Image (cartoon, rainbow, N blue to C red; front, side, top):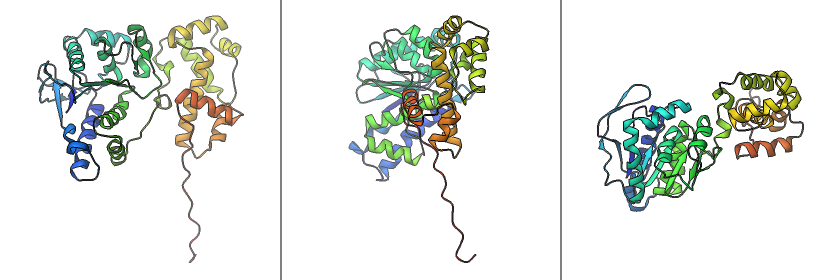
Length: 336
């Protein structure tokens, strides 16, 4: 049984995708298009809230539920899953965790895990699992916007922020809100089998990804420090060549030491690493949206050595750079 726990502010898209993934898996099994042990009995699903009342989604729509999350269920063989809750800043996370419904959900999640259920969450809902103590001593991921607040709040968690989905056995986490699709595929694979999950992904045309770094919004957008914004603009204006730390400092009217301190405080990285991330993000966009091959894209983002670019791209994203396939041109017809 898949149990979707919805709280006020639940993201409409991820919740809908979650329901579609499980529903599609069940339909494929019933149609005999994909095998499943036990006839797919694990693919039943319910939508619940902490009190059995409807909630409002992040878009303000009313989300009806099938009942309340019982302290006595889910249990072994079940999956309890939470979609993201629309919190995009540290202040919003603080407010989220202080809400009465979230405070009630935290021990219910812990109790479900203690009863043997698999518990999973994506995006800002990963903070609910963290507050329940379910991630302590385990690897986990969260959305890139909230990587720093997550690390500060849950120091006992091994944060793998570059991963789209982290399977830590009894607990699974996913990154950005749209990573909820990847999370659901992973849960279907765990509950029924990998072949069914793969068939669902093909049926729904879902991209099976291992990294969210390739799709990440630029981290500097989450920073209120104008120095970080200025640095980003400078790097993006000079993508065709490598820029030195001294040049970055001059562009931001700081010293190299001050710049390093500000970037570390805002983003938890170095100016050089930030510049590299910006280059990789632009490269990923070019690979997806232009006919340029990897060598050409590497040159456009300041890497004369395509082999070095490939190593850096893989290090940052967890995958190899791949150019968009170029459509094959048809030759002239014989009758022309």
